[in-house]
Image 1: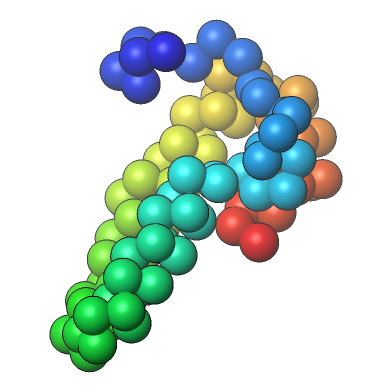
Image 2: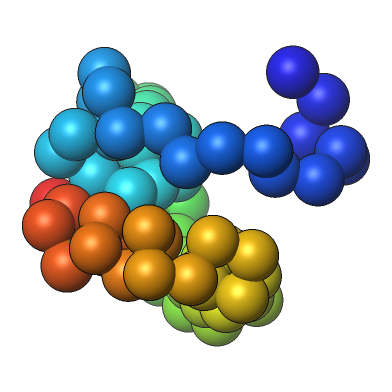
Length: 85
């Protein structure tokens, strides 16, 4: 699936049953884990503004897009599944 192409469906199975953004959550945990593993305090410091930018610049925009495109179907999914954890 090409992430540049428009979304054609809302996936509600697999990890999307627990989180609306499992990829961002997994990448955050991986980044944090690697920063701790290599004892990099600056990696953890950089993570905070990076998460703010991702939340505001990507996640919120994606949610607005999905709500416009899928309407009530997306609102029902959003009411049942948490954004991150």
